[in-house]
Image 1 (tube, helix red, strand yellow):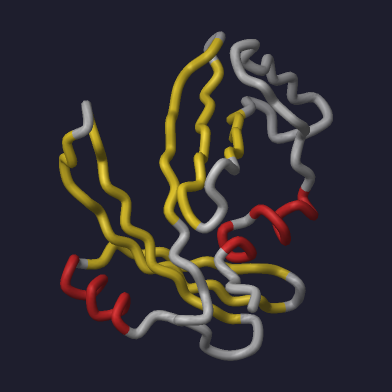
Image 2 (tube, rainbow, N blue to C red):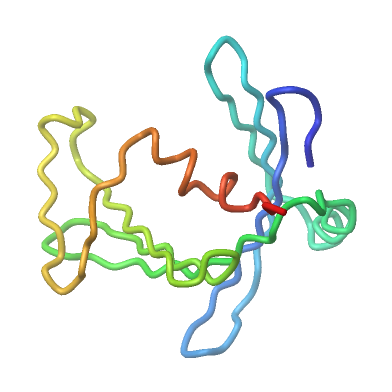
Length: 138
């Protein structure tokens, strides 16, 4: 949903799946406003009914982004793999949670069992972020 220049909203449905069985879903509405070069997000949990209502009025010029998230610990570090199912099947992004807030001093011991292509930089968000991936190019 696009409101005005620099503002948009998106819906999120997160379903927990354990051993192939769906255990339940949580629905969220996020409003994003860009002001003075900064981005502000307001998130709130919504009901399934409100989710379905918003879903019916979604922006049809965008793909629905579906991903599977796999979270795990490796050497006392927290990782999440975002495996995109649509619209970019095969794209996987690894997020690592570092203890330090200073990016220069953060040392992350990457899992040796993963084939990691490269580290994404801040400007990669315009290519690999869900907002960018959702655009339908005709």
